[in-house]
Amino acid sequence: MANTEQNSFDLHGDEEIIEVIDLNDTEATPDDLADDLEDVDFGEPSAAYNDEGWETEDEMEAEAEQDDSEMTFSRHTGSVFCVSLDPATNSLAVTGGEDDKAYVWRVSDGHVVFECTGHKDSVTCAMFSHDSSLVASGDMSGMIKVWKVETKQEIWSFQVGDLEWLEWHPYAPVLLAGTDDGNVWMWKIPGGDCKTFQSSSCQATSGKILPDGKRAVVGYEDGTVRLWDLKQGNTIHVIKGQDGHKGALTCLACSKDGSLVLTGSVDGRAKLVNTAAGKVVGVFSLEGGKATGRRDEDESNSVESVGFCNILPLIAVAYLDGTLAIYDLSTQVLRHSCRHETGIVHLQWEESSSVVSTCSLDGALRQWDARSGYMVSEYRGHAAEILDFTMNREATLAVTASGDNQAKVFCLQRPDR
Image (cartoon, rainbow, N blue to C red; front, top):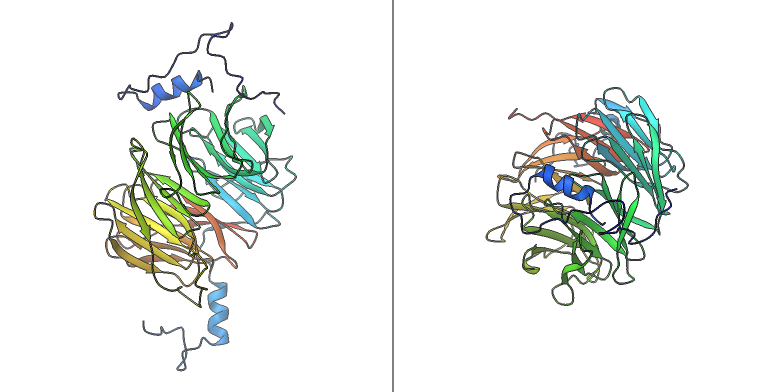
């Protein structure tokens, strides 16, 4: 375990002089930012039904056996909670599970490249660094480990409080984590120089580094949203009270240029925040009943996932009742409501199209055209809920993690390709 101390960065240390990031430099490139952070002081029944509208036993069995995946990874012995693809080649995946295990494995054949050993609780966070050279794994107890992919060796570890989320910096070997005690930690890897961002004692439930690499947005259990300056370690904006949420933050997303942040909460609302002004500029919520069954009047329709479309002024909000809502960003009007039979767990927009993908509690991966609101593809194969998924930049490959103890690789094909 690395022996580090909080706030141990020294701007004027004897060993080196730290170059200060110019926050007013709008011409900085990703490489510049990476260099800077190296020195930061840290309708109708279908044919599947019989005449009475019920599925026959044979039809139900056939549906259960349907598997559209190209490959299944079955090394986990408990639910698989998280999955990440290496961004450089998309040839490797890392998964973490309830069995206290994390594996790095080849997408082509499921071969285990190495196991991230040493965890003693469920691994809920596992992801590659921006250049795919490192992989981080974190368990619920707060044990975080970093591995060098090339050598398959552990190069750093640290113990924090109960872990809520983990996030790599988009340009540099810098790792952020949010914990149950409300702290946000930042480390420079592998040196381990440490900085903490302290706030209230409630959980830091979600976090995201903005595209400029200089700020991070963090959501808390009490509904507060804070925008942090990663260099100075202070809050730039705090959104709370009437402007904040009425319940814990569940998810965050930021626009491609970082000017807007979308927040989701158990209070059933998504809020649009201008990051420069720190002001809420839009509120999105659904009215009405649940997709299936009934919901008590006081039960919140939690927002489970949010995201921005990269090519159109659209956002997507996924709800616990199975509704995928597509909103027009400029008018803030609901454009399409795409219904699922069960709750949605996660959504992800394709990098260069108007298609958004969802995974849900029924074990299916679906793709939706945000222009029309129609489903364009559906992929099945899991025997339980999908808990996480990720896609490559070309949106031709998806890897899913499920409660059936498996991860699956799907080749994504659509009529327009």
